[in-house]
Amino acid sequence: MSELQLLFLVNTAVGFALSWCVLVVAYAKDRQLLLWAAAFAIHGISYVLLSFRGTIPNFFSVLVANALLASMLALFTEGIYRFEELRPPRLLIWWPIPVTVITFWIFSRNFDMRVIIGAVLSSYQTAFLVWRIATDFAEKEGRGKWIIITAAVITTAMFVCRAIFSLTGNSLILAISSNNPVQSITFVGSIVGLIMFAFGLLVMFKERAEHENFRLAMHDPLTQLSNRRVLEVELQEAMRKSAKTHEFGAVLLLDLDRFKTLNDTYGHSIGDQVLVEVAYRLKESVKAKDSVVRLGGDEFVLLLPSLGSEPRTARENAVIVANRVLTQLSQPYNLLSMYGESETPAVTYKGSCSIGGVFFDSAKLSPAELLELADKAMYQSKQEGRNRVTFQAMEQEGL
Image (tube, rainbow, N blue to C red):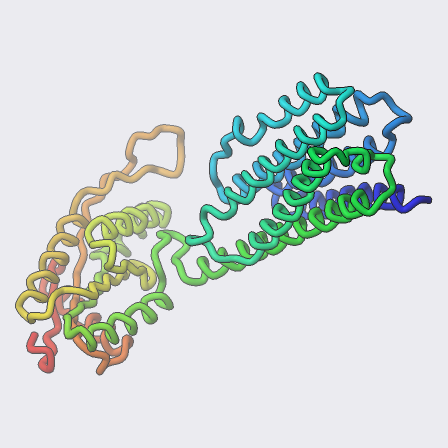
C-alpha cells in the first residue's frame, strides 16, 4: 500500500469513526449533534469516492465527491448556528453546493479551473465559519471555539496553497494520483483539521454544560431570578462600592400577603403563576443596574445600589421604587387553569405585598445582618396592616 493510499484510508476511517462517536452522543444526550455526525460521515464518503478516481465514473469521484465536501462544511456552519441558538442564514451557508455542482460539471475536463474554484468556494465556507464563531467572542468565553477556528484556518490555508500551485502552473502535483509531499501535506492537514474540529465541538459542549450548571446553581428555576448566592455576592460588592463612592444603597425585602391562602385555595400551580408574574413585575419596576432576587417561597429582595449621596435623596428614591412595587403587585392577576384547552382566565386574583427596607453606605454590616434588618422592617409592615413599606432607620447613616 502506497503512502497516498494509506492517507486516503486514514481520512476515510477518521471521518466514519468521528461520525459514529458523535452519533452515539447525539442519540444519548443531544439530537443537535446529528448535523455534525452527518458532516463527519460525509467526509468519509467523499474520501471513499476520491480514492476510486480513475476506476469509477468522474461524475462520482469528481462532481459528487467535491459536492459532498462542500456539504460537509455547510453542515458544520449550520451546526454552529444551531448550537448558538441562532437562525442560520441558509442561502449564505448552502449556495456553494449548487455552484460546486454546476462549475465542476462545466469544467469537468479542466483540472486547473476545478482546483481554483474548489479553493475559492472552500475558503469562503471556512472563512464564513470563522466569522460566525468570532462574532460573539466578546460576549461568550470558551476555548472550544479557538480550537475550531484553528482547524478552519488550517483548512483554509490548505485550500489557498492548492490554488496558488494551480495558478503557478504546478497543478499536476495536486492530482489525486500524484504521490508527492504536497499531496501528503494536504491529506494530513485534512485529518488534523477534522480531528481538531471534533475536539473543539466536544469542548464547546462541555463548556455549555458547565455554564448551564452554573446558571442553574445561581438562579431560581421557577422565576429565573437570581438566588440567595448571587444576592450575597452582589450585596457585598454594592456595599464596598458604596463605601468608596459615599453613595447610599438600599435593600428592599418583600413578602406576598396571604400567599399561603391562595395556594391552599387554588393549588400550587396557580401560586406558581403568581410568583412568575410577580418576578416579571418586579423586574419592570426597577432599573437595569438594580437586582431582583427570589429568596425562596414568596419572599423577594430588591437591591438598589445607587440612590444618591444625600440621605434625603436616597430615601426619596427608595420610596419611589417601593411605592411603584406596591402599585404593580396590587394589580389583578389573570391566572390560567392547568386543566382544559380554554385560554379564558380561570382565576382573577388581587394581592398585595409587605416591604421592609434598609439603607447602607458602607460595608460595616454583613449581608446577612442587612437582610435581618430588612426582614424586621418587613414584619413591621405586616403588623401595621400589610400592603405598605417600612424602612429600618440606621443611625450611622442619618436615615
